[in-house]
Length: 305
Image (cartoon, rainbow, N blue to C red):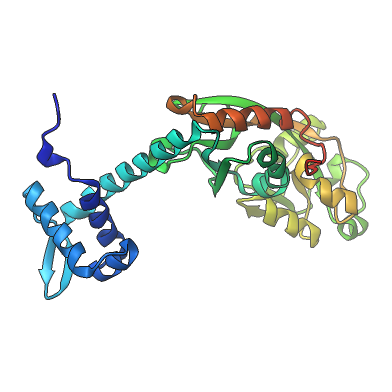
């Protein structure tokens, strides 16, 4: 059954309503939309008349949104964003388009960003927008076309492509190692062992792999690898770092391998995307390119010649 026309305000009404809610006033909304304040006020009045609902309480020249208006604004914002993304997808049929990608912060800055010029060189019409997310989210709610995910292949309602596994190596600063000579993995027990929130069992697996048992002293806790790497460089303890992320510091001597072999965990890096968007051309192009890059994750990120 078709939706009644009175329940479908025009784009001009919806954008004016969304702008007033977002900016907090008709004056700010007018500046945002390049309209007069009077025009915005009339659009709001027309929208209320069409819906038959009071969306704002008037206090002098101020408009105070009702609870109904605030709830409605969330739906309107999602709808306008969906229309915007749909428009960008239509444009992508000409060879361009925009890909909104959620990345893990350290992965994005250290591994992906140096390689992106290669992708853009062969796909000059595609624009990539990046945002950081540490945990799985709802694609419909967030508006991303894809995400870099570390964990298991269990993202609900999403397609996925496995990129590569993670090998963790125990690293510390050279001065820290000189002050704490190590003859083997067991000697790490009792030292400050830095922890990452998303790898709570990493040290337990590392010690078990090397046949070491006993209580493990917990060190500082981090939510990202980037600050953890800096903490290790400054001698605050030993950390388990992915080989491909720690490569620059290991190469220039700011970090050294403390002891033991790298240990591969049960989780991996994935590219994931909403199932309904699997055919989006910029996503297909990016996925094919990323899988080729991931076939050699430890390789150098070189600019295209």
